[in-house]
Length: 635
Image (cartoon, rainbow, N blue to C red):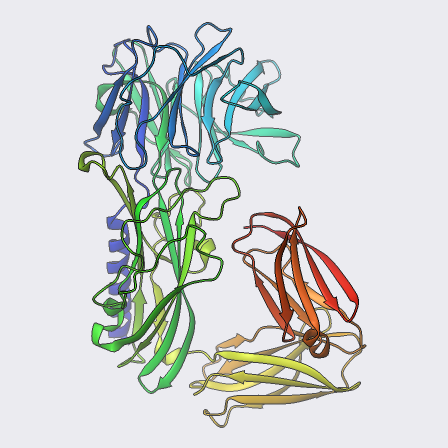
């Protein structure tokens, strides 16, 4: 037992270190200011490895022909078109904006030519502007220091027209002195932070700014900074707030979003002047979970894994891939019958699988040289999901087999000096486990946990469950399981009339481990809806459940649709007779038909991963009757 524990812990530690060896997020800091602390000649630079002990300026771009100094100038990166925008509002009556191509995502370099004349010019005064991942541009205006209220505007960068505006309330006792001094940053997942005011400068998180159901956005006070900071950027899962005294001191502080802690003062990267910041944030996350395991004999099992990879950043990822070395977990000679396929609806990016993948000598799941877009608006092309089927043999019941997939990609690959690579070792679980702490960085501690498999506790796998009426007082519940049922002790048939509170109708002991089909007659059943599920209990007391099916004991054409709101699927349950004659259709809010399928069993599922958040309508047609149900999808 001691040896088994040691092996499990050592393997887990080893794989965790592999996951931590590569950065899941590897940002490029974009600084507008001057090359030398104390200097005034304006320029903007792109800095690789900004939080390391040796940051590198990979491009330094002169802006002195466009502006006499760096006063009242802001810089922002637009994830929608991968371009840089520089805004100059020094006159106080107009905003001049330059749109600049810096080569993303293939390369990173200064524009070959920056015209003196701005790309756009209009009367709207942009204070501390920043793009979100949808390409929407946000800014503050009309601040009243006596009430702590200003406007937070979404405006059109091409015209300066305000698209929408909302009141932003700062917390009592922590009003900023002004919103014209400072900066804001928006994480790829939508969280907004701002450092605002002078003497002192304060750090806030801005919430509800995109919430259509909230009339007022709110600013949550986080920290008073030791010195005034004019710039803020999101880098490798943390915030960097930067400033200068305008003479000889140029500094920054790092703020941990998860722990809420502020780091010590540090010298700003490469001795530059920080006036306004933004960042390119290549970031990737992955999860892996064991979907099914079927015992074939005393040392062999068929396994099904689900692997998920997501672009968590604000820039297109080049050379994206996902590797899974099954041989490292089970031994190359013990792995066979390997197949990989995309989960239906989970490859909107149109990626191509590597036909040579075998999980041992060839571990890249995708063909080389492909890109994965970043998330923009309602697009569903920023992630993909695959299933791997394999057979493993020579399994030891006392060993926990730990396995991880590794997601990877890069930007700036056109030049080795500007190459920025990211990689993330998978976290055990469903897609929601890709970034549990919601800081946008999937590589944090406890977010790279390998996926375990223990042969000795292989659970019973339910293949099917169905319930039908024998008469008005008796129901017949049937289920099928994969064999052999290694550790199963008994099956309990549970029923409920509300889908929440369950009672035991009866049980069947497992006496034949090769028996696949079971049935149970439930007598004196209640009228109306009856939900059934099977609870399987092992010899050691552990248990698992089948899916839930619904039976109607009133000859009605009722259905149960769940969950609602839905995430990645919608389940429709119905009486067996009704189900066989039902047609299912799903429509979006614009009336477009998305799904048209027959309901062939008492329970049917619709995969909703590929659909964006919003309201949908499910229609069920049966012998001239139509049932319509509004469904909300939230990812």
